[in-house]
Image 1 (cartoon, rainbow, N blue to C red):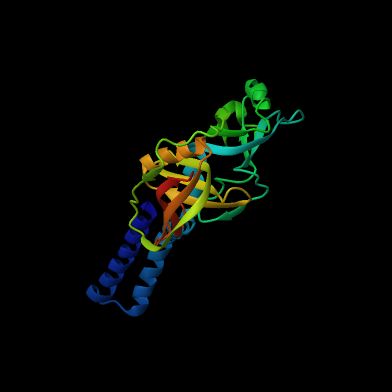
Image 2: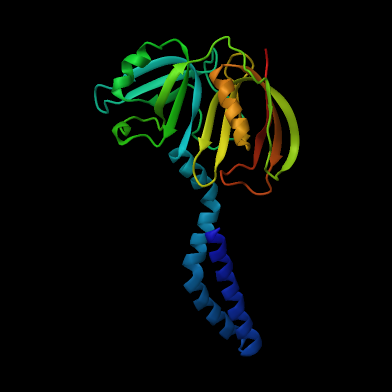
Length: 277
């Protein structure tokens, strides 16, 4: 927004000088051109900087707040923990998202660098034994960014907060939750997707938002990304993730006239989540 205001003010100043030159002072075209040339030299740096910021805004906007002010959940099989004894001495773990996934075929739009498979995280050395006892089990990880300074040598941006087994064979008390969609973007389609919630991320920055990833079907490597507008619906999604529930996700595909804060021109917004027995 600041760059738009600066650009607008610069252009208005140029037009105002030209009007004064040509209409009021009755100068020749050559004299007006000379004045405008000097004026553009004065404004050129500011204008070019503003244009550059406007063009690149979606990229830095998506990378900035999302990678530094988030908290969330990831669910899957804890497949690996390790410590680098050579250079970094970092403790890192991996989970395979969902159930029996091998790779990551990703559908739908989301800001970059949020979800990958296998999903990596950093942890403090005093949690090594706790995690070792959970290797091979389906777990829920609570994580946050930024990570503590003691974990800066770890390549992953995610810091482990809590880890516990997925709740098995315990049906949800509430089977169906209908939320709200607050975006005014135009709907281009709507539908229902069937699968297991594997990732939930809350952006805690100025532009508060929620992201969700599901493993499509009952297993495999196909995943789909969604956006959640409703905080209460996000809380229900957390409960479904912790229970490893299979769900139906009702969504609305929205097309923005301009790319939004995260550089996304279109996105799938969740309207309701329904647990499947």
